Length: 88
Image 1 (cartoon, rainbow, N blue to C red):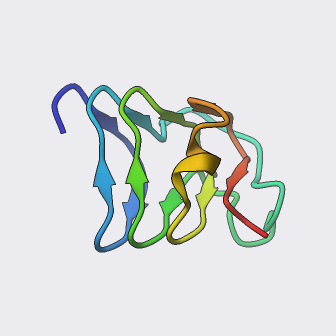
Image 2 (tube, rainbow, N blue to C red):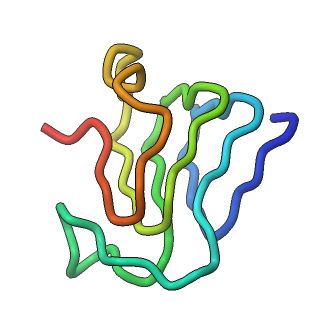
């Protein structure tokens, strides 16, 4: 998408990223708060069939569940290092 920066991220199939998003970064980061033993190396994971809204920032070690609904995305436009989006 126009104006996006994607660094050290895995974005699963069927996911759309809006414009002007920042996903991941190369600086050291805290481990993910939900799965610290699995997500601590700086990768950001975006599960399948998501629509990441424009102007969203996802830090490093962020875990986005598959199929996060629009209401969940609307809660914030910034998800700091180590956070999780849409986990139940």
